[in-house]
Image (cartoon, rainbow, N blue to C red):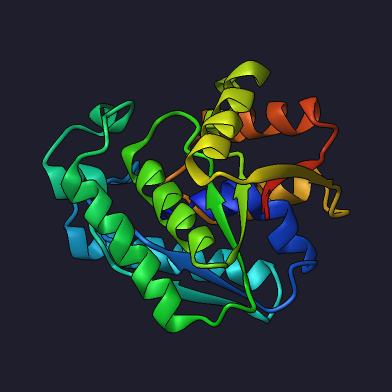
Length: 229
C-alpha cells in the first residue's frame, strides 16, 4: 500500500524494479492531491491526473505484471485544508481511524488472504502514512501477511534508535513479534534514481539525494519488517 503516488516507488522501488515480488498490485490510497512542484496554481483534477500518468511511466519501467489501483481519497493538505508542512507529527483523530478502517475494509473486500501487504512504518510522522500503518495493523489482525517498509525519504533523517522505537511500538500495538528481512534485489541505486525521475511533479533533486545517501548507508539493500505470529 502506498499512501501517495510516489511513496512505494521511493521506498520499494528496487524491489518493484527487480520483479522479485511477482504479480503485484500497487494500491495508492491518497491519490487525489493539489500538491505539485510544477505549478502550484494548477487544478486538483490536473495534478491528480499527472500523478497517475507518472505512476504509469514508473510502472512501465518495472515489469508488465505490476498493476495500478487507486482508492482516490484526498491527501491530508487537501482533505484537512492545512499546509503541507502541517501534516507531520499530527495526532491520530477519530476521523483518521475511520479512514484506516475504510482502507482495511477495502483491501479485505478486494483481495484474498493469500497476499502479502506492504505498508509504511510512518517514519517522519506524516498523518497519511500513520493512517495506512493503522490500516495494515487491522489487516494483520485479520490474518493477512503484513510487511512494513522504511518510508523514504523520511527514513534518511531517522536514527537507528528511532526506527527500533517504531518497531517496538508496533510490537506492543499488534501483540506480535517482528523479523527484519534484508534483501538485495540486484537493482543498482542508479537504476532506481532513473526510474524515480518519472515523478517529475512530486520529487525534487534533494529527495533523490536523500534516497541515494540512505541506500549507500545500507549498501543498496532494502529493509522490510514482517509481522510474525
